[in-house]
Image 1 (cartoon, protein in one colour):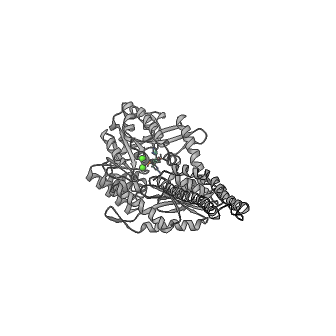
Image 2: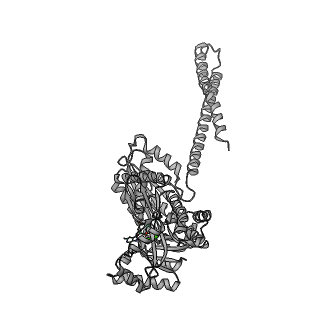
Image 3: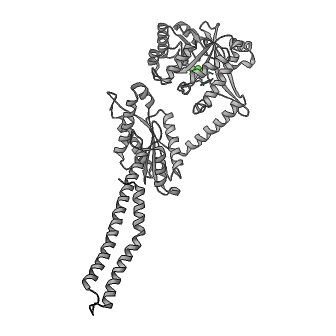
Length: 509
Ligand code: C2E
Ligand code: CA
Ligand code: CA
């Protein structure tokens, strides 16, 4: 088959000769007219010959015309095939929806300049895809993604679909400017996903988190529309996933605040405004210092001391958390000789998800000549962990260095007992909400006692957090808790005061 370009050049030749075609027709006409005028009457021109010549000329012209038309048709077909090929090349191989770049260009084209055509946009993020991939294999993850896109296609065949990232999809409805209708579609998608589907030989429901925005009400162009839906999606994820959230203006203010804090935090790291405070942890006799917990504080030039709850969640959304945490660890290493007992550092779930986390941690210890057994890493119970996943590989690598692992805030997540069963750790920290109700709630007391029993059985230590009164200390000692931490023994304080002052604060508290 000839390529498009050779078809094109043949067509060019035919076009050039289209002048010739009119020439031929003209000549035929001329012949007829000349014959009529000059000699038909006196027999000088043979009429049969004249008719034959004119017919030949017109036939030639017609043939040329037909050839050109057929060529044009073939070119048009080749064009359709080429467009289909381009379209295919811009589709995601697994789900068949548009890839990110093509989706954006399609959206831009259809939305038009100035955002005059209303567009409803959903940003859909499949929940727990990573866990599915890690736990049941990539084929299971693929099946789930395909089920998601098929579900959307079934509900709204006319929607323009694009895959924006591993587990993220864009759904655009051209001409749909009503947010309530868009939110309803989001709910329908979730409802459909809740119907169990066969994945890796088992029936299971799926879920997704969806952010919704409409143009021109929420955004003026494609980029704005997508970023606003993304903001709503992010809010949905923070609220616990599996929901549809519509964008509203307050989210933007929130986002600006986040960006502001992020910028300030980067500056704070450079200006050494990030400080380590230490809080003592005692044996449950209440007098033997066992270790310290390092807690971050931001000494802001104008706003004073800022607690971690105001900036850690924001730092966790970028690499700032890694830099902040490394700065903390370096300071802890430097302070260790003066503190004299091991120190616990807090590690965020997002850090544990980074493949190189443990090796960077080990490098900092090496550089400072600190042996692993001087350090405890506290991770919250809310880290979603699977055997063989990055998180547990990081923890295994840390334990190989002699670092001990503590499960922080035990009892606040949904996975407490599952955790105790499946992971290797050295210490559990009972959340202060249990300690606060120890004397008034029989249930809380029973839970704390049960956790201490389990800990004894598997030979791990139990630290109770938030101990504020002598009565709580007595109850914890009776239950068999190993160690205690709380305002009764000392508030977090900077070592700049000197280790003796720290100990004095501890014993005076
Ligand atoms: P956490 O790890 O559970 O830390 C214990 C928190 O309880 C600390 O709050 C501490 O000041 C507070 N606390 C200690 N004793 C008592 C008490 O007797 N009563 C009461 N009411 N509270 C007590 P802080 O320092 O504000 O830290 C809050 C959270 O911020 C920490 O909770 C931890 O999750 C996070 N955090 C602190 N420092 C870091 C850090 O360097 N890195 C990371 N990733 N997170 C950190
Ligand atoms: Ca902690
Ligand atoms: Ca804690």
